[in-house]
Length: 174
Image (cartoon, rainbow, N blue to C red; front, side, top):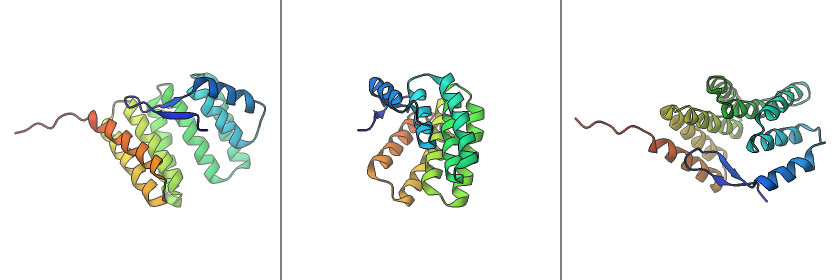
């Protein structure tokens, strides 16, 4: 069962079952593996416990650098940047996400690049930069298609692009 029930069409943030997220967090609280750390970071983020989430995200990035692969480091850095975004540090999140997206694309790690572009777009959307949001989200969609993502991932990307499009200023007719 997925903890994500959908996405808010205005904020683009995950809609989650808060009780199920809290329950899952309690289940994995003592686990120290990198996947468990990353899951705990995300759970704390969606539960609104951003200070705890940021501290744990820092730890996850350190652990990934010491014992993980380059892909693990990128995943941890993207998640870390989403915490910065939720805290309103859009410039810092933008820089981190752009760097992660570029590195993943350079390595042809399409799913990680798509993930980074998706969050780069969401960060830009939160910051009110709808042109950048639209371009990043379109890039994410392209990469997802190229990597063979399933329909639900493509649909999520399309909904985010539509949200950014709704915020475009009307073109002046001369």
